[in-house]
Amino acid sequence: MLVLDTEDISAADRIEAFHAVAVGESGSCSVEQEHPEAGIRKRLEVWNFGPLTLFSTRGSGMRIWRTPRHSRFDSMNTVSIITQSHGTGAFTWNGHQQHVGPDALALAHKTAGYEYAWSGAGQSVAFMVDTERLGLPEHLVRSAIPLLEHSAVAPLLLHHIRSLHRRADQLSNDPGAEALGSATLELTRALIVSVTTDEHTRRSVAQNTLLTRVLAFIRAHLTDPGLTPQSIAAAHNISVRTLYRLCEQGGLSLEKWIIRRRLEGTRRDLATPEHAHRTIEAVARSWGFTNPAHFSRRFHQTYGATPRQWRRLHRPTGFSPPDVP
Image 1 (cartoon, rainbow, N blue to C red):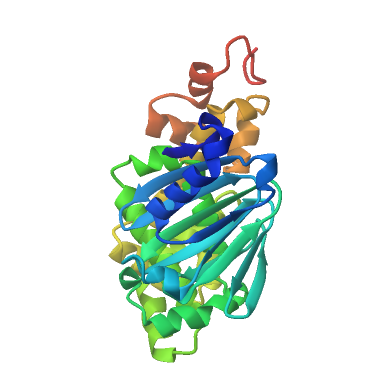
Image 2 (tube, rainbow, N blue to C red; image 1 turned 180 degrees about the horizontal axis):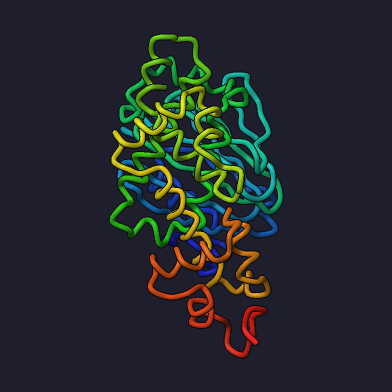
């Protein structure tokens, strides 16, 4: 949901308007705009997923910082995961500095203070959640901040955030929005404990979040035709039998869940203009379907239309895709 676009505001009022919205949405902070004399450009969007708030901030360079002093001016005690979709961000906390590019993320704890910035045109996508919802000691959260690059969970969470953001308007209004927020929270817990030294907490959270991590791993590898129960189990150091038992306890069938997610991907691509030049077989193969007849049959069973019929219903006006003579 769009909450601010400075294009709709006079140049003289943009800095004040952005600061007011930033404070209103995420709490007390200080903001410094890069080259304010040249004019600033900001677009801020916010979506709610149950316990979690997702933010997208796009525009000209800026620096935002929070100190323990800021936290005394409001009651928000939050943890944020910050990513950079465009440009390179710079995150600083307690002597720790890191660059945040498209393949990295940063962990920020509001009451501990931090600084985040980028130069030139950029876009950050971040989410915020109350610290107490994590169910982890604050010292554990802070100890994880400089160690995230060593976590095997980080790529899973990053892919999950990217997926949420791509379809945020649709997903935030879906009945499953709160469940998506809870899954994101579980991945965040797993991320933090994966790099901390508290063995008891690490084992406990690893067990409690195993299914969430398995499903996130599958989502990140849906387009790999080599994705199998064996490869999934091996990636999580469990047996195939344990994998199936875990899915059964979670109320889902592993194969059916994978096929449904892949079908959703093909359905989306077949209706999207940027994939209109590709054949149906190529789209199906890119989502792991190696047998065209099997794919077409499952697609029809699920959606009541063949892939060709679905594409015809959604093709751009005047465009004849490669599968249509």
